[in-house]
Image 1 (tube, helix red, strand yellow):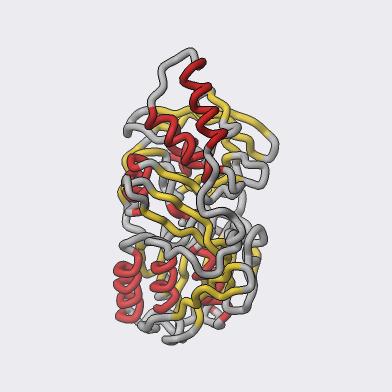
Image 2: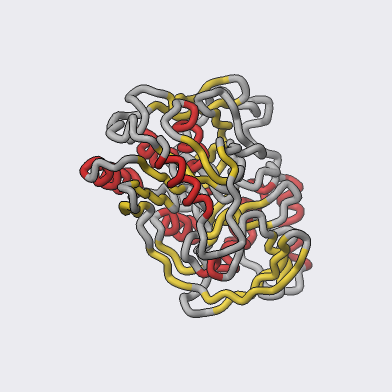
Length: 377
């Protein structure tokens, strides 16, 4: 649900204010922390540190550290400035390299998905590439947000990334760009096959997918290809809106659970004008979060056939909690489950037909496989 501009909520689903209480797994913790040793450390820093400090700097450090302490790469604290940048990226407007960042189990900063046509994509960055250094500075110990902030910059300026791909290390210089793109695009392919591409699940997705669906119907398409490759995810509401163009009203899209407790079940909200039209969903290792929700829902209800490679595997949900000073806490609140009852965290979704991209960059073998499938159905 993160783009890089560098960071997009792609790594994340859910948006809004969280109601405290309920089925918390941490009800045994005290309501207020004992800050005595924190104050001791604070006193020791201001008395002994050889440099200038500010109270804002130190308070933000404490807040970042509190979020980092849970050990979850998706739980993060944003200052008011960081939150503003985050929200602009959620609306697909940012200046950067255009790639989704995440962290792996070793807490290394990795590429989740490069945005199609972005500087990151043109530079050859791929899902699960490790970013070892940014402009010569090691990313060891950095949060995803801190790494994203260092990669961002004015359009036209350059950033040097040290990338580890398949254990081979190399440097790449990427020129940043201002990227403002609609989340959904569509066209009619030869053979009267409709093609819909969604690059993120953003605020404009619900409106744009409806226009795309209406276009498909007006052209009486024989079949539809829904391209979710290198789509890092986004808002759960957008995933529900997209799924609802195929699913019958009331059919389950996904379920959120915390432990064994069901927090919420998301169902199709109506529309379903594409129901019954043969559909292929294209996925790959950069398809994450809301992309996996959509692909899983359409597949489990037999509304789509999946082609491509195994998806990223992000089966947890984040919520944005607005704090009083304009800062935001993005916190993992639950795991999500497909209609078939499976959670895909670290597992991903294996397509019905596994097709890898060919060595010829000009030939999209996955798209060709989708067209071939639809031609016979």
